[in-house]
Amino acid sequence: MNKGHWYGLSAYGVWGLLPIYWKWLQLVPTTQLIGHRVVWSFLSLLAVMLWSRSGRGFIQAVFHPRVLLIYALASGLITTNWLLYVWAVNAGFIVETSLGYFINPLISIVLGVLFLHERLRPGQWISVGLAALGIFYLTIAHGSVPWIALTLAFSWAFYGLVKKISPLESLEGLTLETGILIGPALAYLLYAQRIGQGAFFHQGITTDFLLIGAGLLTTIPLWMFATAVRSTPLFIMGLLQYIAPTISFLLGTLLYREPFTATQLIGFGLVWSALLLLGIEGYMAGRSLRRSGNFLYPDQSTKEQQ
Image (cartoon, rainbow, N blue to C red):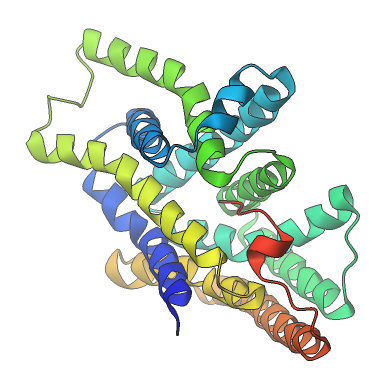
């Protein structure tokens, strides 16, 4: 494994372990957690951008209405994803959040077909069908749609779609997204402090440091991921992305003792089968491309979408 592989492994490992961090902050209201995540992420991203002197595109985007609209949409999607994820973790639905990120790549494939006119190979269609069957089974068996998993999957997939058509590099783009959110986030946090419901400075120094650390916990894995995609083939990054939901699933079932029934096992099994087939199919397609000399690294074919 080269350095890029280790960066990718580390990024997805951190994302997989995030439930532990949010559980440490479960006494803080979810809305305040996200408010602090936005504020401290923006400040840390802005510092990195200024240090690296890479803010030219960011400054130009601020005065470009179309670009601002694209990133305002991205901000709304990432806020929805963050809010629901943190709430679900602290409400005892870690297993269902993992399902959302297991099926996310398959939903992204469908969005690519619908919006970017991409063409799927037969194996990819079968994978999508198996995942849909798994979701359908879980819906029928439990009598309700697994809305947490689907909302997380669709919000992240649409976020990736918006990022794919966005003009800025990953650092500038995420700085602009959090910059769009920082006004409302600060206003809400100051209001919570004013009415005596703010967690900052009121729940101990450990909580204060954890709230500040939420920003670093957002930016550091993103930096590792951005570094990884520059030197790691697409099919390897595709396989590494399943590390995060796998860790979360294991945390939910083994550490936090969330129930995992035989019914869930069947539904998850169908989704896992779909992902296994997708991984094998992608690996075989990658081998064919490498043999033909047309294999691309991620920085040559797509933008970094996280």
